[in-house]
Amino acid sequence: MTTRLYENTVFLEHITPPGHPERPDRLRSLNLALEHPNFTALKRIEAKVANEDAVLLAHPESHLFGVMRQIPEEEGEINQLEADTYASSKSLQAALTAIGGAMAAVDDVFTGVADNVFVASRPPGHHAEKDKAMGFCFFNTIAIAARHAQKVHGAERVAIVDWDVHHGNGTQDIFWDDPSVLFCSTHQMPLYPGTGAKDETGVHNNIVNAPLSPNVGSDHFREAFKSRVLSAVKDFSPDLILISAGFDAHHRDPLAQINLVGDDFDWATARLMELADRSAGNRVVSLLEGGYDLEGLAESAGLHILRLMKG
Ligand SMILES: [Zn+2]
Image (cartoon, rainbow, N blue to C red):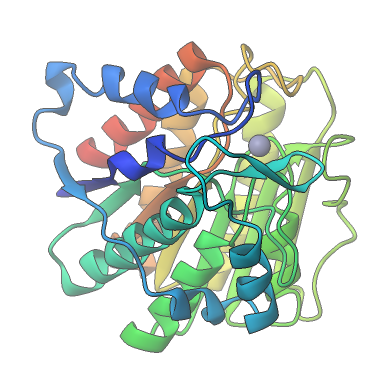
């Protein structure tokens, strides 16, 4: 497999208040893991900033302008957008560069320069609803990537698989009434943001939620992933698989109580790659979402990327 990874130092310049779990050290710990010789063949590329118009693929203009208005001008200043969502002077540039990386990743898998791509970006995106920044997220990067695949590359069916331990309420909100996008999520419930019950199925049965009870581990996760997520993706026969890759279901993570190990992310990646091989020409694009224990994140994301490289 040819695997690319998009990164940019601006992702380290989105600053949150002291003690906030969504912090630049997350990417530093992943970068340390990527120094291992296992990753020598990984093609690491600098993500370019997207035009602000890209945001409009998934959000109204009012949301874009609303976020822009709340970005502080002074370096060192931090603004609170919402309960737990903060912006520093470089946050808009970081969020737009995350979008730029995701769109380039989609371009790469459709033009064939890469089989699959991981975007090591922050802030994350899956909690951002059509007109609401929340849960550390400003814009829904993965929704924008899906729309970009449809608009520019003619993708008819895009599957988004979200294994972040929190429900991807924003992605569900954006695609609730869109039969061209399948959204499947495994997540702990109850937990923030409170959505993601099994009976939330979307207007066209294009939403598949597989909630997990607190304190379960690999067996429950794999069973739910197989019976709910993989079967839905297989039936949907997507042209592209996008992954909202959060690693906060790892047992070390401080924000949730699911007990996955690194190997579970390797396993889930391999299963999705098998499905991508069947219908999507191997096209897999994975975006970093959550993951707040530095060791758990580096281990899990490392194994995920290694599996993308190995096939
Ligand atoms: Zn999360």
